[in-house]
Length: 210
Image (tube, rainbow, N blue to C red; front, side, top):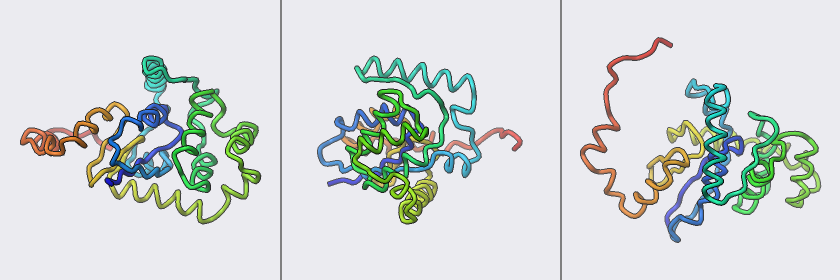
């Protein structure tokens, strides 16, 4: 079996869209779900998130809704965005970060449009997942440490956005890269083409002042 690390944050509608494409992966791929704090990635690389740029935020939601509709996938954005995803990220880890848990949380936020952090929404989500003491689950130090390590591991691997697949050292960022990744899984030599190597190592001719 080939191993794939999938770095994601529930704050991303693109991660929701990609999650619902997992069935298209080859049968010999095992996905390791790695929840990360997207804000931690942004802080490390000095970036703004899409939702922090008003026009980009509007574009993101319009495109996500359109793509979900084309895929026959339910899509209802939460009432507030961006939201603080720490509760749902930690809850995922506390429950073992399995496929069913991840799917239930994504569908709660992006499929049916529940708030991503409001106490009443989180209580309802915990009930769906059979968690009787939500605060105890998300307050466990081992859970917090795992989320921090996932985010640190992602940074160390060069991950700068979510969702991102890391397979055999090769990084594929974004749901729109999924089809390219599937082709690469079938034929890894596609990235050995001289032009592919050249364009991934282009020298800058100008840089913005930071």
